[in-house]
Structure formats: C-alpha cells, structure tokens
Length: 416
Image 1 (cartoon, rainbow, N blue to C red):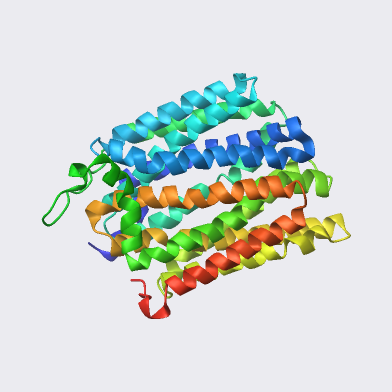
Image 2 (image 1 turned 180 degrees about the vertical axis):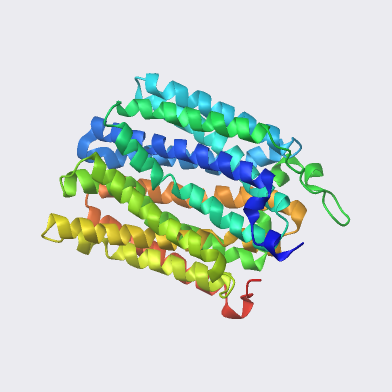
C-alpha cells in the first residue's frame, strides 16, 4: 500500500459513505437535542434542568440496558441490515415526536429512539476497523467520527437557531427524521465486511450461552489491562459533559437572561473545543501515547468544570458569558482527547473477532456513567448551579486519579 493511500481514509468509498451517513444522522440528532431542551424550558422554565436530566437519564437507561443485549441478539445478522433497520426505527420515532401531548409519551419515544441508537452505534464502530484495516487510516477515521459527533454541538445548534426564526421548535424533529432516513439510504447502498470469525480453538462468541454473550464484552474490558483505565475516564467525561448539556439552557436563560440564540452558541462553542481536538489528534497521537492524551484531556475537563462557579458568579453578564464560553470550549477539548483514542486501544489490544463485543460493552458502560451524572446535574442543579458544578468536578477529578492508578506509565505504548 502506498503512502498516499495510507494517509487518506477518505479514499475508501465504503468508508466515505459510512462517514456521510454518520454525519447526516448526527446532525438530525443534534436538532432533536435542541428541540427537547427548548420544549423542557417551555414546560418547566427554570426547572428545565430537572426535566432534561430525566429525559437524558432515560436515554442512558436505553443505552446501558440495550447495547450488550442487542449485540448478543444481532451478532449473527449482517451489519448493514442491522444499521439500516435501526435508522428506519429512529426515523419513525422522530416523526411521532411532534404529535405527542403527554409527558409519558415523550419518555417512551425517547427510550425507543435511544434503544435503536444503542444497536446502531456499536455496530458502526465495530465495522469501521474492518473497512479500514490500516492503522493510520483508522486513526483518521476515529477523528472524523469525532468531528461528525461534534455536529450535534456546533452545526446543529446553529442550524436550529436559524430554523427557529421561521418554524416552531417541534418542527425540528422533522429534520431529525430526514437525517436518519438519509443515513439508512446511504448504508443500504454499500457492502460492509462481515465480522471476522473467532481465531484459535474453543467456542466462538455465537456459541456461548445468551447470558455469557451479554457479559462477554465487559469481561474482556476488565481482563485486558490497557482497557481498564477507560472505565474510570468515562466517568470523568460524563461528569463534565452532563453539566454542560443539562444546564446550558438554564445558565443562558436564567443566570444571564439571554435568548435561545445564546443557548445554541454556548453548545456550539463546546462542540468547537471538541472539534479542535479531533482535528489535531491524528498528529498528536503520532508523537504521544494514548495514556498521556487521554489522562491529560480528562484533567483539563475536570479543571474547567471546577472553575464554573467563578464564571457564574462574575458581576458582568458579558464577562460571565465569555468565561463560560472559554470553559465550555475546554470541556469539549478534554472530552474529545479522552474519548477519541479508545478505538486505537481496542484495535491494538483486542483480537479482531472480539472487537464488536468490546465496542458494545464500552458503549453500555460509558453510558452507565452518564446515567449517574445526568440526574445529578439536573436535579442538584435546581438547588444551586455552583455547588453542582463543584460536585461534578470532584467526581471527574477522582475518576482521573483512578484512571492514572489503573494505567501505570510503564504500561503505556507509543502510538504508531
């Protein structure tokens, strides 16, 4: 393989369509996130954080419960069919959301929507390294995927702010449905490699009892020493990220008395920080170990969360908003630095046939952390934003310390 090909993941046509599908579906998801936040504020005013905390907790329950179970159920099915079916289901749910008139209906539809995502996302993650077996191309793909995820926090809020000038917020859910539908069409148009069969002797994954298949990925993550720190660092990301996602609308609208455009702008700044990291990480990971990048990123995120009370307590609205923007950028930067290198660890440390189980387990376990931090950010935030930020910063810092202890420097491997 020549150097030019190795340097460009986008030269692979199958990957280009997979990435495009991810971009359009995440853009639609971002519109739904904004619409849910504004709907919560319409219903609860300053208590919107409690409503969003509950909605996001339901989302995490779907992820935690469904991801490992779904992997055990669909492991024998073609990946393309699984992802297309999940997209179709997500589009159908998005079409229903503008017509609900009861809170329980919203909760039910959010659960179904996120359950489908819990099937789609790990399947997508496991397919990419098979489409791009070259480690340098795969490293680029990890950053591209992170950039696509940042659309939820950068382009989607900006697009939502523009659309809200001419349409009601519930109309944003139609954009979500269009995104999922486009993703289904793109994925249906490509051939995705089947998962590799297990190597060596013994029973394959599909031959294990159902319960063992559900637990398999988590057990692998704990057995493989290089993956143990990820379990702790996921909690650091969830602590800082939950405060940003749940309380931005309250900070902008209540603390500083601003409009929906400022809500969207602050979320976009957070995404810009993540995007900045994603753009630079392919080069950074060529010179630094995953350990240094991931621990450093989580430490930056924890420090930024710790400084939130100072920003909220400033006497000037302009100064306070600027300080919050800087901190939101830092949280996004640390967030991406902590999450993006995980795929490289999996490719290096986990046998090819076991990777789908590990991706599904990490998806579930990481969102278990969010299941804890979302309600904390939402319900405690109604009592006081400053103390809530301090508590979540302490949680994040403790997770960083635990990650460092689980990941001794002598075990670090320099990236290729």
